[in-house]
Image 1 (tube, rainbow, N blue to C red):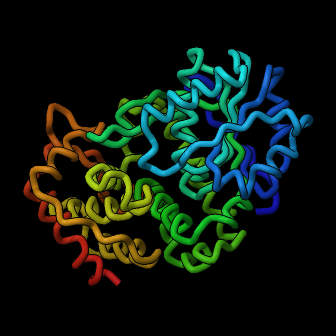
Image 2 (spheres, rainbow, N blue to C red):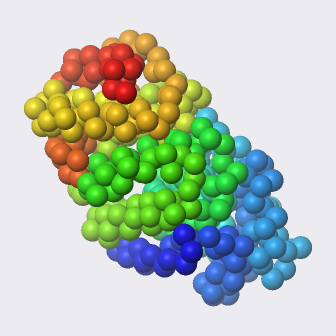
Image 3 (spheres, one colour):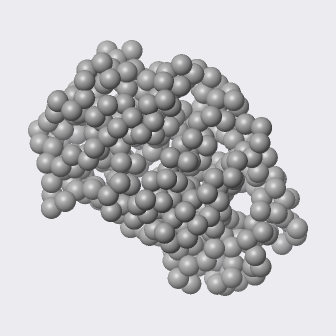
Length: 369
């Protein structure tokens, strides 16, 4: 990815730019300054991300010595209202006011938590995302969804709050552990299945290049996913209809995360299982041909091994699925592929069918090589 791409996100509540390209993190200070006057920049991140990228980020600002840094645990199990409260209290203690700017440096958990804090603190302060994981660069940093988990389910408390700027630098992916990087590829596969058959074919041809973090391959994939999400957000910011398709793979994925206490799976890994479950449900409902399903399953499997899903009592699984944000009056709703490049939201999927599909996933995956 040689040149920096400027991708406009025209959400109804506010437009902003995603700058995507190598080196944008090192110029973050100038990009933030261009947003206008502020009374202070507050960096929210996790200790491990800050060790890698905190220094180059702060150096890009005019007064590095004045940096106000607030670090917190970015494990999924810490993504809760208590963490948001602690961050807001730290902001008060650090002197943040309504003209402050919060810069969220990290992956999806940092972005979701810092974004919810920015939306809530003093009823809203400016927010800049600097995503450092593939999941965050192609998905979670764009679109304004912020939120935290409850024991009952994923992202059940939050707000729609658009950032003022997103800086997506693929150089930040260099220090990402292999497991976390692979987890992001399941979100890329999601985008291909829901609306981009050409991207799906590229992934089939070039997955090995992506797995070794080839700059040219990343340069094709990251902006393409960002543009796809920007278009969905433009048409449906608050998930009234179309935006639901972005939850392909997330219904079962969120349930697996909640039922394992957010400790067993990375988010992308749970989505990987969810993509496979939705694909098999689509075949069972006669909405997807077997050949297309086999291509999807094979591509997911090629990304790498996934943590095995636990054996779950049927009642617990169904309770978790019914806690999903897409459920209506207790009726299960899934985003299911119709063909590669097109999906539909399907309501009233029988619970027994879902249980059988989830139970069969490990064996079916072994056969999908």
